[in-house]
Amino acid sequence: MNRKTIAAALLIAGTLAAGSAALAQQSAPAPQGPAAATAPVLTIQEVMDRLTREGWRDITKIEHERGKYEVKARGADGVRMELDIDDRTGAILKQERD
Image (cartoon, rainbow, N blue to C red; front, side, top):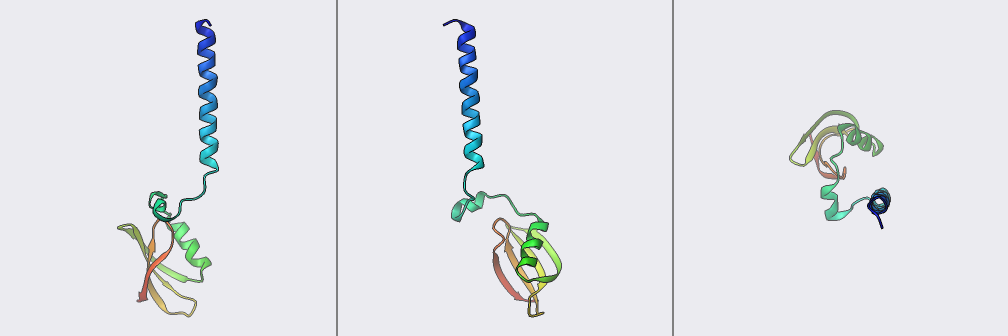
């Protein structure tokens, strides 16, 4: 084989490998459990959207610190609560009356 043939073969092999890796990343399932710790941090808007879907309203405070969001909102029953929300999963970690 000459150098041009080898270079072309390597280029094609590299392109196929990169395409396969990209396809594998696109079809990978969402992380759960300990792998969720490497998931991206939710945005404030994503946290607000999740809380609204779960029936929370009158959200007046959202602060991000130490791996969680601190939120003040009213529950479906109208009671004002302070919530700690996991910043990667959106799970409510703690809730208490405000």
